[in-house]
Image (cartoon, rainbow, N blue to C red; front, side):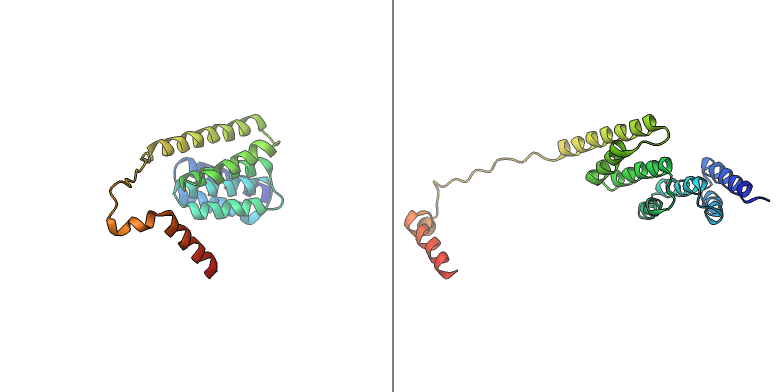
Length: 178
């Protein structure tokens, strides 16, 4: 059997198993693709593994695999862009909105590969979702109340703390000691 036929077969199996939620079988099939090639099919297989890990909430592993894709040579723009978008999703799960937006913005600013309009639209929509999440979290924070201090009812033993001469002496004393 020719290698490219095997690559196609394993990639098809991986995608099929992933669609059927048979994650372990999908990962096995994707790894077979990775063993036989480093072409665009390998990039798609690596991305498939990243998606499965993300869906399994294995965010650290997912990020590691995405970073491997970023360093992979040759890189394939479309699958790399999808992986970086997935990295943004990974950051959102960790509530690291800054890095999520940064990852997505890098796609908007730099991507010019296949399906450019679709890929950029996805990144933009995800940034908008992050902005909504940030606003919701900010709105959910309890409002800080102003605190007032009443200096009218000072304990007589503390009155000298508020006299200007004593304050000035304490400041001068600290300056002299430094």
